[in-house]
Amino acid sequence: MTFIWDIRARVQFEGDAHVLEDSCGFNGPNAWIIDGATSLLDPLNLPAASDPQWLAQQLSMILAQVSSDPSVSSDPSDPRSATTSRHGVRALLADSLAAIDSAGTVLVGPEMVRFPSAAISVAQLTSRGVEIASLADCSVVVRTQDGATHLVRAELADARIPEGTPEQRLAKLRQDRELRNTPDRLWVARREPEAADYAHVVQLSRPEIMVMASDGAWRAVDLGLVSGPEEFLARTSTTVDALGLMHELRVHQGRIGEVADDATVLTLAPHP
Image 1 (tube, rainbow, N blue to C red):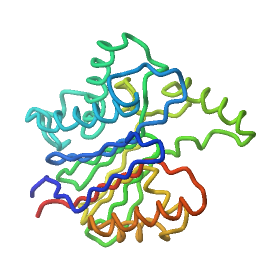
Image 2 (tube, one colour):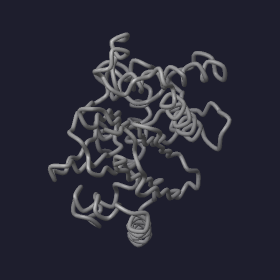
Image 3 (cartoon, one colour):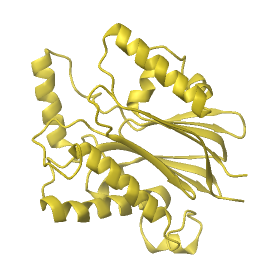
Image 4 (cartoon, one colour):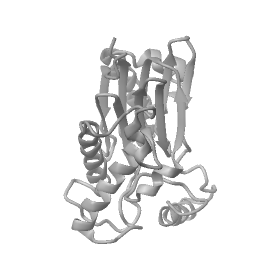
């Protein structure tokens, strides 16, 4: 059986900030989507249009490189996987974050709290089907070969922030950023390899088709433009359909006065 993804759709729309801080890609058995978190703390001025853009682009490139390494097995049953306490997608995610840590050390030293962070989902085809690891709120919808539809997501990034005035909420959001990747708080992709140990990991059977979406694209569900995961998958199964849905989303957001976030859709199917 082949463990390679074929692309069905890839669509990215910039948000109102006009700096694309999402990224996505696939290589061999691995696919990923990355949604850089909007900067709320003092920026580090990394070499990109924004710090979150730097992280999203660098992490995507690293994932592509790691996926090309023949010494890294995608199948947990492979004896080479037994050399580490992490296997499969956890190992892939940990190795990639370790590489980000090395790159970050060169640019900003040990700075951790102000380092950019991101939501991420990584999917890996194996002999058992597809394994998905997620940190924060990218959404992955998988239709398996038995016809069932599955939604995989770790945790909404700001779900723990209490309501309040705009000033109160901003203060709480900043405090939340400072406490991320610590015990009992939200874990995200930043520069700590141990974040992989806190990822939400799901094992599903062989997929028929899969769509990975940033939270900006998932607003189509939140705002009721589509009824849920099954319709979202149906409306993003081809590039033309995905473009149509994202355009519809942008028109609707403009009509209701909502600030538009970056929106990324990546739809894939296993190579026959």
